[in-house]
Structure formats: C-alpha cells, structure tokens
Amino acid sequence: MKATDKLVSVIIPTYNEREHIVDLVDSLFAEIRAPLEVIVVDDASPDGTADLVDELQRENVVLIRRKARGLASAFHRGILEARGDIIAWMDADMTMPPQVLAKLIAQLEEHHIALGSRYVEGGSDNRHALRTLASRAINWLARTVLGGHVQDYDSGFIAIRREVFDYVTLLPMGYGEYFIEFIYDSHRAGLKIKEVGYAFRDRTVGVSKSAPSLLSFLITGSRYVLRIFSLRLRFITGRD
Image (tube, rainbow, N blue to C red; front, side, top):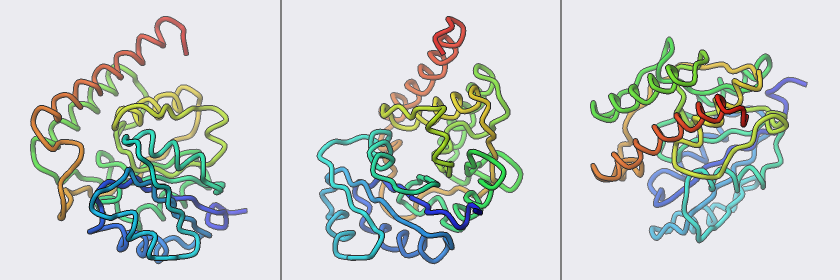
C-alpha cells in the first residue's frame, strides 16, 4: 500500500490560535489526499480556540482539551490518540504550509521520516534576523556536536511512519529541544531521514510562543544547548 493510501494522523498543538485553526484544518483536508484525521491538542486556550474547533463538528477532527501546558507533551498526547499508520505534527500558526506536509507524506514511500527543512535546497528562513541567527547557531551546534547529515535539527515539522516508535521514543519534555533528541535518536537507530526544503516565515497574526520576550528567548536557547550536550554525553558514556 502506498503512503498516500494510508490513514494520516496530523497532530496540532494549540494555545490561543483561534485566528488560524479553522483555516489550517480546512487546508489540511484540501491538500492531503490520503485518508486523514486531524488531532487538535489545546492547552486551555483562553481565547476560545478549543470551542471554535468543537463548533466545526467535522468528521475526523479530534479535539483534546488539556489543563496542562507544554509543546512536547501536547505532541505526545496526540500521538497516544492517533490511529494513523502515518503520523505528522506541525505548528498551528500557518507558518508550516499544508501543501508541504503533503510532500513529506509522499517521501515516506522510501524513508522512515520526512521533515520540512529551512536549510536544504528549496528552503529558507524568513523570520526576524535575530531568530534566524539563533536557529542557525543551534543547528550548527547540533551538527557539530551530534553529527549526522540532518541540516534542520529543530524543524518541528515532520511526518513519520508509525513503526518509527518501535525504535525511538518521543520524550514529552521541553519546547523545541525534544525534536533535536528525537531526530538524533532516529539517526542513531539507522532510520532513513529525508529533508524537504520549504520557506519558513514569521506568523502574520498573533505572538510567537517561542520568543515572547528576550529573557524567555535566552532561556529557551540555553535549554536547546543543554539538551544537545546532554545527548552527546549520553552517547559517550554508553547510555544510548
């Protein structure tokens, strides 16, 4: 059976995303030709995001309301609920195009993992210069310390075969650093990873949750750095 014939579960974590969520859900059903379920994991958004999703009453749209907060844990909860043979996850803010997700799914014919990449041919990072610089620095550090051929270690935009979880565990901790660990462990397990270039841009509505202030921006960056070096230490000490 082709990847495009299998059920695809797309997990979308939300917190105050009422401006985008309906358009994103509609776009996913328009662009993904495979059987599709969309799982929205909402972290008690005060702007009514969850209520808006609930009002859609659309078949194959699953709403999970949580009182907890956290990006990695939201993805983990969605994965637990997913029924698909293919599992994908992405941001809710329309910075990750659904038509690119369709390309990622097609790559699973020959690869275990396909991720949207800003730093391979066809990709670009069109955000504020400071955020672009920080992301490039984190990726340079990850490639230098962890090795591997992956150019966008903190992409966060991905489609995988369900069988990947037979080899790798997604740890529900952190913001974007969980993704670095997931990709590193996948590479170490010998899984085939394909990067597909796409143009990433700043969100046009709302406020980014990754850098709402300079202080949180620095704190988030330090967590990425610590996770990278802890992964390398784990490898050196043989705790893989």
